[in-house]
Image (tube, rainbow, N blue to C red; front, side, top):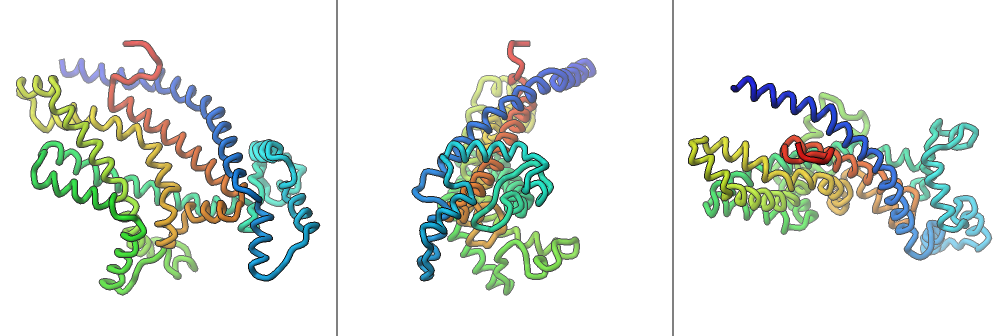
Length: 365
């Protein structure tokens, strides 16, 4: 009987990969195209909403330094950057050049790339090179913080739900609310002060001077991890409360259901009831929100990143918006949108494994 059940489970997994998963991924990838196109339209036109453009902001900055720019020079700059075109023409040209830039263009000869993300006014170089400088580090830091959030929040939530109104339940609630209630930049300043008092080093920034000069290698990787502690605690704890409260509430609801009482009456162990049945059902809302969490961590920690001098995308996006560098801001938001769409896809696939009732191909089985 046990062997038959095992074979049935293996067959279900194989069938899932053969039909459901493949069909679902193909459908979602096809939906990526109109979704990203719609996002690109919204992003580009929202960035254009503030009055003026990069040239106006640049001229205003020069004026504060006592340097005046005449109207002919400003018009010449707008023509060079393509800012004199109607907004819809700028958008079409932006999208067309990102998708494909011919080999006979100056951009391809200069950068050897068929995907022209345009020129960053604020940084004075190719947009993609600006984004690519910090993209890998941003994704890595975001992934580490997400792992920290879930490794801390889920065990606390399970414990709190199985020990409702106990001292541990109240302590976990207090810790969770403290992480959410204290502004991130204040917590960052406090932790940097304590780090300086205890170790003589405030650990500001992800890289030391030695790392900036020689890069991150095995011999200085430990120092890099030490510098990650404060960002992980500051940004990670800001999202733990929501996860703890969500999983705890779902677990309490599942623990009180009829199937749980029936399992207990049949002598099933408490650990099996909690982890195999209740937890699998309770974790679904949290898993489905992975894409949103990824988005909030990717760009929502801008102020904290500036306080901690972190070399990630948030401060770059802030500077791009401040200087009306529309191509750079649009590129960062588009990369973020792609990552969120991929994150949502992975969370939906994970849901199918966690809850067998969820199927993508439609119909009952």
